[in-house]
Image (cartoon, rainbow, N blue to C red; front, side):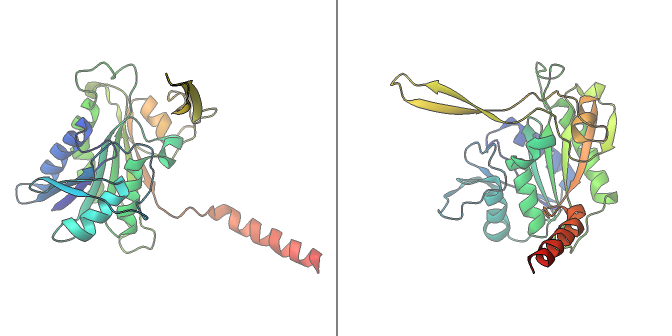
Amino acid sequence: MRILITNDDGINAPGLAVLEEIAAALAGPDGEVWVVAPAFEQSGVAHCISYTRPMMVSRFAERRFALEGSPADCVLAGLHEILPAPPDLVLSGVNKGNNAGENTLYSGTIGAALEAALQGVRAVALSQYLGPENRALDDVFEAARAEGLGLLRALLDHAPWEDGADYRLFYSVNFPPVAAAHVKGVEATRQGFRPGTHFTTEPFRAPNRRRYLWIRGGPQDRACAPGSDVAACLAGCVSVTPMRADLTAQGAVGELAAALRQTRTAAQ
C-alpha cells in the first residue's frame, strides 16, 4: 500500500510523527509512506490553495518533503508532482486539537482530506481532542496512538467509500480528550454544533502603539447534540464522521424551487 500523509501543524509537528508511525504499520513492510507537509504551521487555512503564487518544495529525506503551502497544496503536490504513482490512501493529521463541530469548517487538516477526495483518492483526517484529562499527559496523542491503526484498518476493510462518485466520501476522526486506557469505544457521528461557540477577535497594542488583532476560538467543552462528533468525544469515545465536499443543503432545494416559482408567478 502506498500512503501519502500531510497535516496543517507543519513538517516538524509531533502529531505528524505519530501519524507516520501509524501509516508505516498500516502500509506494511512492502508498502510506502510519503510525507508532504507544510514547511510552517497552516492551522485554520481550511481548503485554501495557493492559486496565485508559486511554492518552494524541499526534500528533507527519502519520501519526505516540505512545501511552502497549505495542506491542500501538499496533497496536490504529492499527487501530481512528487509521488511516482497515485497513493492508495491520504491521511491528514494527527492534528493537535479537535476538528469537530464548527472547527471542521476552518481546519486545514480537513481541507487536505477534502482535496484528496476531490482528486478521487480515499482520505481520512485524524485529530486529537485536548482537555483536562489528557493535556498534561507525557504524550497528548496517547489515544490517537493507541486507537489509530485499528480504526484505519476497520475503515479500509468495512466502511463505505463510494469509489468513483463525483463528490466521494472521506472521513474525519476525532480521538477523545482522555488517556488511551479510558477510551470507551468508537461511534459513527455527524458534524456537531456547539451553541454559543464561535471565533472572535481580540485587539492588542504593540510596543510601537500599532493596533493588531488576534483571532480567538470559543470554549471546546460546550454540550452538543447527541450523536454528534463533539458529544461522542466529550463522552470518551472516538468519533468517526463521514463527509463529502458537496455543500448543497439538499433538504432546502425543493422549498427554494417552490418559493422561486411563486415569486415568478407573482411578478407576472
